[in-house]
Image 1 (cartoon, rainbow, N blue to C red):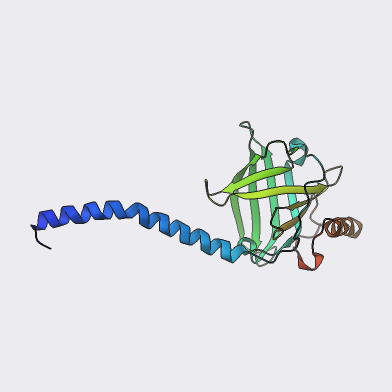
Image 2 (image 1 turned 90 degrees about the horizontal axis):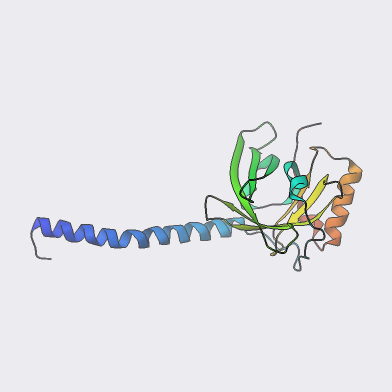
Length: 200
């Protein structure tokens, strides 16, 4: 290539500026693909039903303990998992997920997000996002107790499932009720992984 050092430098800078957005986009695409591959588990329900009941967001808000789930890449090794939901003034739902690595005495990790209610869903379907516009996922309250003491959460693919309780150690009867309902909803209960929670 011919040209003075100044011209070569200017051409190099112009090329770099043109390529940088492409490099960034490629990097994000690769990262998202890698995350999707990591987090994709087996389909535990090939025909996920529509949510059974409408949800009062003010009653649903508050602290929930995860007592069971389908294992997934973003919760690997997590015990003592909790989810706290808040109804925000802007109409969105605040989401704060916390887990302890390894066991309930392990290092605490927390991530914050937000959720938007899907129109005409009775507040039972939400779109949850973490890290800004990335990692947007479906959150379906498939069923819940009338008194909001437990909740079954899934999404359309049937690969993800969470069993939530207002208490860290629900009774054997409550656990059986939840698992029976999970089975009735069409999920493979053999894929449910119990989550360790601190003693009551």
